[in-house]
Length: 384
Image (cartoon, rainbow, N blue to C red; front, side):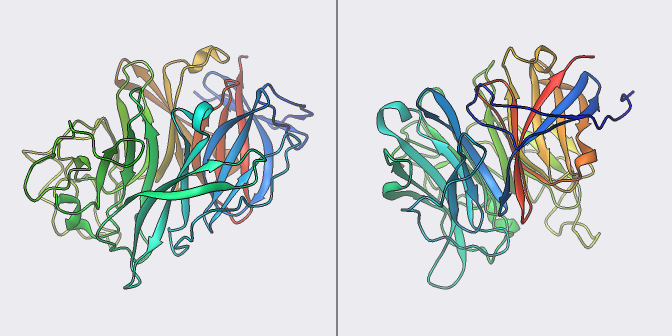
């Protein structure tokens, strides 16, 4: 049973992450204690992805705005001018500047990776990934270079994905959408609806599952995905977890294995937005495809995900946090090994679309709200 919601407000100062709040902290009820929420920054236009950057021994936040801007949150809670040196983006529909990730060797090379939608000659778009060096004055990405393009370009503004994750070996996973072209998720000669695995420079690892196979793109790690907007490495197993939007129903979490087919659109727990069946669907389960690791029959519209492994808030240990857009909540999933054994919806009182969630180096959770006046929120827990 949830405890009665609280609305207590107090002042809050500078945190160990080197980021100041805008002056107040609010508390909300949860099964494990009081959830604290602070606004670190406001007025960001549809922020999409965030990354923590070490600056003079502290952590600052790089935040993408979907119209095509990358900003650095200052220590006083303000935001920088847009960084120079970014590529032109296709800022239409769900497209624009999307995820941001630091190089696995950022301390040496200062490389920042971006995913974004890019328009082709025929007006349609696809997801592109590039990287540039963060300048010493923190005002630009220098020598930006594209390392990956989703081909063919098929989107008119929908289902780009995408999340960027480095594994322990420094290999880059790119979680992609199927551009709202359902059948392409099953086509191995296309990069729609795929999880891609690359070396840091964009080259294909020799042990990718489709290397040397006729009619298949060698970048592919797994396929049969719809619109993937969450990806994170499980810190206890080292495995990559991803999640994706279903249509009307059928949002799902997967632990993608090399070469496996995750079903979309042939196997799905969802139906069309028109309430009619998905034309290609043959059922919720289908031989030769992998079932979801976890599925929501009613879609919360999930985006962003973070495993919690910090010591700061002990009750959150071995929990997975997922943002929800339509449900306007932060979903807490309690784990027993890889099994998800309990679910709790947090922060519904805020009534905000949560686009991204990350664990900060200070042990707090950091959220982005998907709004025209989007916010960065810092979230903690106080036991009763």
